Amino acid sequence: MRTRLAAPVAAVLLLLALAVAPHAQSPPQAREIANVAAFARLYGVVRYFYPSDTAAGLDWDRFVVYGVGAVRPAADAPALAAALTKVFGALGPGIAIGATLGPPPATGPANPALVAWRYRGAGIGVETKGGPYMAWRTARAVPARTGPAARPSDDFDALAPSAGAHADVDLGSGLKARVPLALSDAEAASPPAPAGVLLLREAMAPRSAARGFVDQNLADVVVAWNVFRHFYPYWSVVTAETGVDWDARLPEHLRLAYEAADADAQREALETLVADAADGHGRVVDPQRQISGRLPLRLRLVEGQVIVTASDARDVPVGTVIATIDGAPAAGRVADQMRRESGAAQWREVRALQALTLCRTGAPVPLGLESASGARATTVTCGTGDLPEEKRPSLVSELAHGVWYVDLTRAKFSAIEPVLPRLVDARGVVFDVRGYPTDAGIQILSHLIAASEGDRWMHVPRIVGPFWQLAGYDHFGWDLKPAAPRVGGRIVFLTDGRAISYAESVMGYVADRQLGTIVGAPTAGANGNVARVVVPGGMSISFTGMRVTRHDGSSTFHLHGMRPDVAATPTIAGVRAGRDEVLERGLAVIAGQSR
Image (tube, rainbow, N blue to C red; front, side):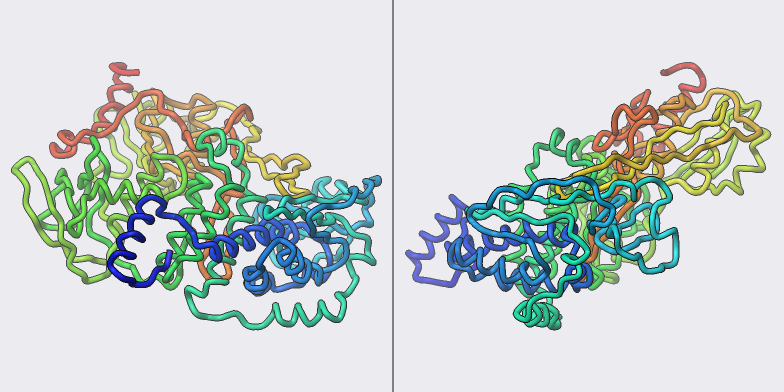
């Protein structure tokens, strides 16, 4: 909330009011946010599902900024309805906005000649898209593009739209809207009226390049909120696990963007929005952000304290507890950052600890340290490059007679393949997946399975309307076949919260095909191909666009991760002693001493 300096008494009263209601809004600001929220609820339905030619050819990044500015000053509900009608009415026929709506149109039979949007996964409104996600309009030619075929090769096109298909939307502020989801050829091709042409020209005017422009900030939220609202496949899980009400949270996200004074505040506003989605792939990237350095330390949260597990700083050895950074409690900074990260707790912790190491290259960073020898202070210079690696055995090594270690996060399959004959007769093999695997992650599985498999555990939604209207899924798997030689002996996989996405695909095979004993901690709980959208202000937002389940399709492990058979985590004493307690537990399983 923006305030001005006032007389001392007034200032005290203002501070007391802010203490009681820190997010209180002035009436004009509250009205503006309610207006933009109404625009946002309609924008996503029209942007992604209204199938006119005019809408399909629009520069929507410019349009959304224009639309926000057009509706924001509306003084009341009738003025808001008029502004919304002016903005959206230029896109084609049939969009109705008002305090009440007439009887809905009769729904006719399916008709392949009608024009409607169809999505396979998060197509994000383009006519065709590479990878697993696509979007197109029925009964309209798809322009030739490089990459995969412009349309799926299955029966998706047989899902013809129906005459009269529509969506009714509660906009708030006492208003409702009706949006046609299917148009005839003549309706879709209908040019806007002359007044509409002028509107669209104004909407297409160049946007302000200034960061922090309030209409642009609000437009960022409008776009991001709608992409998650209509294309994110895990709402049922997230709602059940976190209780978040995505629709109800919209005004708060708009408020944060409205009050963002600079690019950092706007990025944090978008991070708060993405955090509400509880998606481990959810991330906000500002290409103009100038923080490129890192502390030369790898950190873990062990027994509630931030501890160094790998170090390239001479006077900060492994096992040191970082008590403060720049004078602020390190554990408190981790907790604050976790609130802005998205996904399961174990993954948010990983991301928060990574963020804790970010700094400006060359800058001195004061640290308060605690070790077995006592507390002290030091300063570490912010460097460049990757974080130092934790101490582990060699990539592929025999730890004891007949007991092998293979780090799937560091060793490529070309380094593993020559020793496969020796793994056949091994007493046991420990595969390390405490992180993101190389190509060896998938390739080693063929040397563990006993028979060909056709499991379908990746599911791309067929989206035919707003608010998650589905016509089923396209189902995929890896279709692995056994390969010689087959690895023998007791098999153990080490994993923890650093294992995300592809790593969890590998661990899904291990768990559901019973390929070994899983030792460690739950994986990150986020899997599926990633979609990405760039919001009008230039920041990019990523999220999971595919639903991934267990191999029998019974459930997802979103927000839970793959649970270990044998729990094992580091201790501060173990880190200081140079021990790898998770690996030790895995070796005990091979020796038959633990299960």
